[in-house]
Image 1 (tube, rainbow, N blue to C red):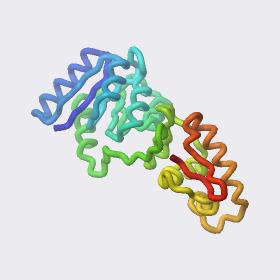
Image 2 (image 1 turned 180 degrees about the vertical axis):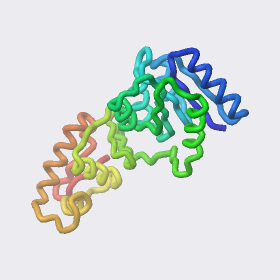
Image 3 (image 1 turned 135 degrees about the vertical axis):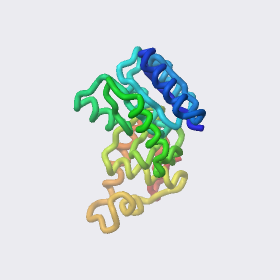
Image 4 (image 1 turned 90 degrees about the horizontal axis):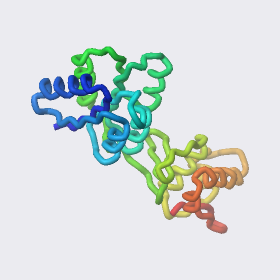
Length: 223
């Protein structure tokens, strides 16, 4: 049985979707419903879902905010169902991690078909690997990093440097080893580039950056 969530402030739309999915699914779905952004945010924080349908314009946190929060913990399919049909909003929806974007007015039959196709997608992986070091969480498939639940933006080399350290947590990596892993074997430059990048990574991580330790004569490690 698949567990679904719909976050929609229109009672008529919410009930129409729930009723159709329950009738058509014949017991295949358990459906939670939220009428505002606050309840939607709480639902995705406290529960796990196989698919989530989101309106964007909601009382409280927007659908975009809920989508961002959900993507921190899950790779489940997300469908935006909204009156915002401009190209910019559609592109933003996909950039936020949505799998489908439907504009109101819509066909509940088409919505059901799209959701069914997403649930049956064989390559869908719901348990994404997460690399962790204390408050630091790194999502390799999305190249995202969070420290104390705040997303941190890294330049590519900074990201791969942090990834190398977390993948070898509690082990010392020398500067040459980090150069090979991040810059590639045969990099023609000073190993001091590692020091400058470690400094930037520490600064961006804030207090969590203290987990990156300098080992005199050895290199760096993260604990």
